[in-house]
Length: 314
Image (cartoon, rainbow, N blue to C red; front, side):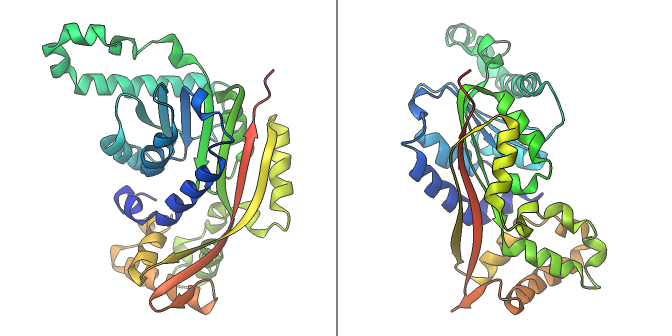
């Protein structure tokens, strides 16, 4: 997933589901009271800037997009960053006891870079800069505060150490803070990865395939499995559901781009083999009935785990 430009144009399924979930839950969340918001696994930034941002109150303080991929963060920062939106590179599953300090430092560094990029305009209007509060961006006590709400869409199925991820999210939240998340628990893309990893031409590039397939893919009880992780992390469950979803790609090229944009193996292959790999992905998906072709459209069915959880008040 190192091609943010392609991902930004091929993530229609992710944006559709995020929008539907936020529409369903927006009246159940305390969005009007949110001042600091975190989007875990923000990718190329579209969900943060185009879907989450419009739902926030006008006086929210800060929306932070976080992703493991530096390429994604640089893309999002270039396109969507402004005074209230900042994107940082960080591993949410990092084994640490200082997650708030570490993320605060990342945020402050990113804001400092913004200030340096704007130094000429600030120098030309120094009095206005001193008066508009920007001098408080770095080192503000508010930057050390925890978040009111955390969102995460289409990220956590890539995280193998979910216990560390939820420990960190718990520590990043204020008491009473909320999390709204959705991630794949069963998907044809993971079945496809396994099938292709067993073919002679691709096996050398996919030897670690199981690292990219979530535990839930083979579980008969994904909701119960996830409940145990939440409970051990200290979270309270408000709602938790596993929903079957369907998405229709409107052309051969659109489904091929979607597979390419989220494929962790493609960059390992010689450029001369990549097109063959993508074509074989679709051919194998048809053979295994993982997609349903219909007049050059391709329908896929998958399962999302959707959860609204809270940190206890005390």
